[in-house]
Length: 473
Image (tube, rainbow, N blue to C red):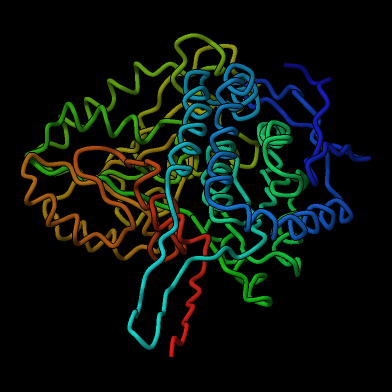
């Protein structure tokens, strides 16, 4: 992999070079690893017009043809596992083992979605009348994905949208466009021309894509603030929306939890991908009677964590992906320190100064209303607070603006389930971190999102109902 490799847009089944390109940086070294083409207005129009032109044929091709195409694309991803994984580590920063998991997970997601079917329900069937409702696609879907899981989150949108009969224009983050551009290249010859288009560019490309008159639906994974901006822009055309937004997921550790298991799993949930996961555990409430034992185990995991460039053997956490996020997270840590909060930080080994590495931090028992508790860090920072009444914790968590996920930790599954039912979040797990699978619906409550991804409901989200009634007499 080198910075001299030529990357192109995918428009109407063809590779398209552009007059200008933007450097893509390795967050572990800040070295240029590639040049991403910058799509201009003509490229944008060409991609959307191509998608619109391909829509009728793709819609009418039938479920089996579309499913077969998803399986073929999954095979192409799996066949390029090594190259895609190395590129993903270079541009995103995650350890190579985690990059391989993302690549293979993307192929697995495509295969799982391909096995689904769209329902057709009978509303009435009499001698006089037959009425059925079937699911039909919207048309052109604009898929906008972030930099934390640039390949997998693209597939989360691409697979159900295509299976349902839509055509897609994908816009990756300007920080991590290369794996998406590679995906577009792999799809050429597998998907019919125009069915899947990939455009890279700057922050101005997303709004222009959302507001385009030929785009019927927008599927976004991003921050709550970005989701609000997309809603405002899309409202002029009443475009359908799928918004998977921010979260501030809480783990609630009860007094009867298995502390060793809870600490190990919560640590993994909090610091995987350097904390850059929408459903990462971002704050922990621990019962007062087990707080000290829990915190001690978390410190042990912190001290054992190996931080470094993702291509090195044994590395468990890489750098934060981009400079703006690095500055946001380090500023949050600095403010917590200036406020006199008790911070327990890992030590970074020498030689990491050139990259965007942040020593992972545990914040011990900060005030419940402190910034570090209420702000989604989206980085390797984890506040841990003590409580005595679980009802107080539930009320505090539900009072926040986010409602993506959460977890309950207890040996009493009945009690844990009762508490889980009280959490106003789209996903709750008991005795494990967030569980994501192609067959599990995933939706945010409140400002954490709109719509559903994954599962049968996630497939239906890329369709709209059409009722056909026939008078027989």
